[in-house]
Image (cartoon, rainbow, N blue to C red; front, side):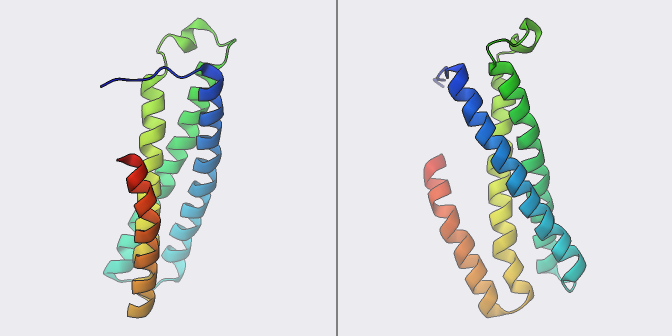
Length: 140
């Protein structure tokens, strides 16, 4: 696999965006998680929605945390001890957990409507699938 070396300033800016989005979407996921946990009537669909929202929240927390590491490693005045790893593993974890969080959040959104009605279930599933299409096309 051919990997491209990114300019440190570009990498830091990209990691900053991952960190912001991870923190924001982690909050959204945690809110969905807690709302479903406290307000929804127990059912298989609700349990799946809660589980997916929990996975999304946890993945986005890891994304935000890893973005700090990427920014630290790409800083021009970073100590050698920080730069030694090259940051590839931290970058990979950041991107992977962001993708996992995104798809888990879309899954939770898609499944959540089924707890209320079939019509709402079809709507939320359709919305989640439509949102997933450009994400899948971007990954492929």
